[in-house]
Image 1 (cartoon, each protein chain N blue to C red):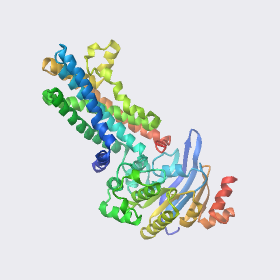
Image 2 (cartoon, rainbow over the protein chains, first blue to last red):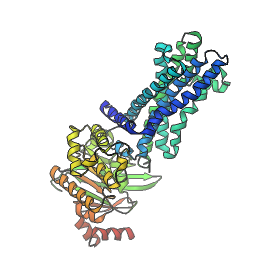
Image 3 (cartoon, rainbow over the protein chains, first blue to last red):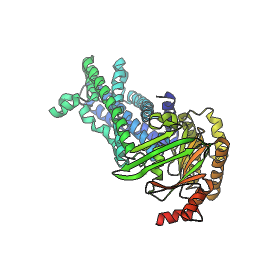
Image 4 (cartoon, helix red, strand yellow):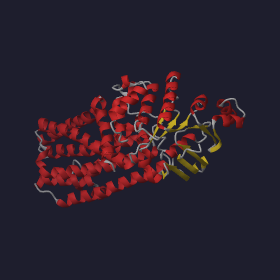
Length: 261
Length: 243
């Protein structure tokens, strides 16, 4: 693993965002839209005697968006290379598939920082909501959501590599699939039994349960964090192994040169 | 070729897709300082061969050694010393030419990338395009930028797939002249695939003629013409393609 190559390729995406208005919109517009829509819903609910909902909803929304942006940072950045017919240039260079994925992780963090800064600032200005009231717990919350986003993004990217550009819609929709079972805006106990069981194996569900516990009781159940971290470790390991295996299959089937055609 | 040493050694290379052999038990060498042309009709197996030599496609069987090293187990070391260009690939459209070249200079760990970029862009007459986004370039200009990228790391072997397909005759001629000059000055080896038979005759020291995944002839262009009784490689190509 050469860090110089990882960072070299991360810079490629920074150049891209510097002058692309649609891509900057992707970073700022959707989060802003999400925040306004859900923020006003939250304010409405708070005014209608639903105590604690501002902290509950806005905090959940910001944290969910971090997972979503983390996944997109991987999948959409990969698609940028497909769309520009640049993928072969990368894979005839010394850069390995794992280094490539690592560079996508770096850029996903950069995009996440930009998006989060906007969302957190707007939440504070518009709704007087300060996400930092979670204190140091914010770090493991975010870390777990980012890692889960990476795992989803890596698997999605592997599937697009394997099945071609027609599956690129996965890049936009797969993370949303996890939203109901992540119990972002309601407790896991609300879910029917089968989904409740699935939620127990979803790292983000543990993060959001933990977040609600902090808001409701002021204390964080450490077991939720441990569950989330262990599940994430397993899932991201699986995702990288799946990508590596899939990359070998793609090369064996001669599909690497077909993608983007 | 007696005094030259092979940089690329291919032995019994085969690639099957769903039981159909795209490349069928081919063996050849690319020697130091030679331009080896890969010719043949569509579906002959040229592109699949190039892909296997660049580790983009895994062979079904056979051996590929580059610089005496087995490709699959020395990928990063080997690919750092070779490069590739094709008229069928491009570069990130929103980045400028300079940004793209800087990225690839980093990927190939090029020492003094600024000087190298200046030298190559001057040679390819694209210095005025350095700060232009790739999306604004013509296909011919993109091809020249891709060729510049392919020479950034001062490769020992260059793999070129139809590199002049989208160039006008003037730039195509200049490109061939530059490749020949680099070959002469630096002993660069080039594996060159093209459907332009006149170009292949002009630039190649040797050619490999492929058909249906097999090598049906190899040698100097004059030897190939003699073997098939054609006045030019074009004539030979048409004979083989239409038989």
